[in-house]
Image (cartoon, rainbow, N blue to C red; front, side):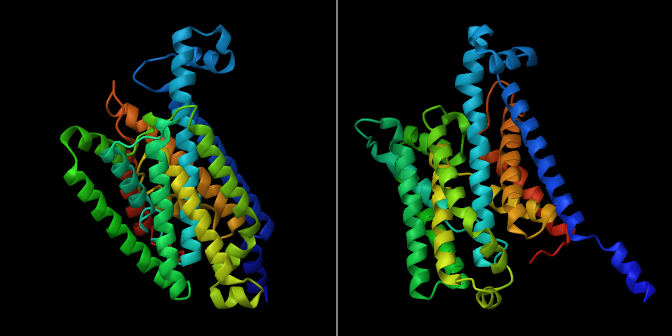
Length: 350
C-alpha cells in the first residue's frame, strides 16, 4: 500500500501537466518574439538596435532610409517567415494525425512539389494576369497545389479514405509533380531556368505588404476552421475504431482536415516557394514538448514552425554577409539534423 501511495505522489498530477504545457507555450512565445526581433535586426545593411527600435515604435522620428529598410523590406520578410512556419507546422500536425503516419507532411505528400510545378510552368510560359501581374506565379502555385490535393483526395475517396491509400496516393503525387518540374526545367531557356530554380529554392525576398495580408488571411481562416475539431483530432490519435466509439465521425473529419491542410499548404508556399522539413520536423518537436493533446500540440507546433522559419531567416543572412541565401536551403540544412536528433532520442510517440 505504501509503495502505491509513493508512486501516486511521485506521478505528476493533471494540474502539474497542464501547468508545464502552458509554461512551454509561454517559453515558445518568448523565443519566437526574440527570433522576430533578431530577424529584423539582421541583414546586409548593418543597422543599430536603437535605430531599428525607433523605426518600429516611432517611424516618423526615424531616419528615412532606416524606416524604409525596416518597414518595407525586413518586417514583411519576418512576418511572412512566421506565417509560413505556422501554416506548414499546423498542416504537418493535422496531416500526421489524420493519417497516423509520422512521415506525413505537406512536402512529403506532394503538395509543395505541385506548387513548384505550377510556378515553374507560369514562369516558363510567361503568361501574366492583366490587372495584377505579380499574382500570376503565386496563383499558379496555389492552383496546382490545390489540384494535387484534389488528386490525392479523389484516389482516396475511391478506396474509402483510408490513411494507407492517402499516403500512397500522396507519394505518387509527389513523384508525378517532381517529374513534371524536371520536364519544365529541361524545356526552359537558361535565363528562365534560373528564375525557376530560384523560386523552387524558396525565398522570403518575395515578401511584401501586398502578399503578407493574403497569406495572413488564408492562415487565419484555416486555423479558425480547424479549432472546432481539436477534440476530435485528439480522439483520432486513439485510432479510428476508438474515436468512432466515442462519437467521432471519422471519414468526414478526415476529409475536412485534409481540405484545410491543402489550403494551409497552398497559402504558405504560393509566395515564398518550396519550403521543406518545417511541416515534418516542427510537429515532432512540439509533440516532444507538450504531448498529443491537440489543445497544446497545435499552438506549440505553430510556435515551433514560426521559430524554425525565423531562425532559418536569421541564418540565411548571417551565413553569407552581404547577401541572403534562399531560406528553403537553410530549412533543409537545419531540418535534417533535427530529424536525426529526434530519431536518436528514441522517444516513441507513434
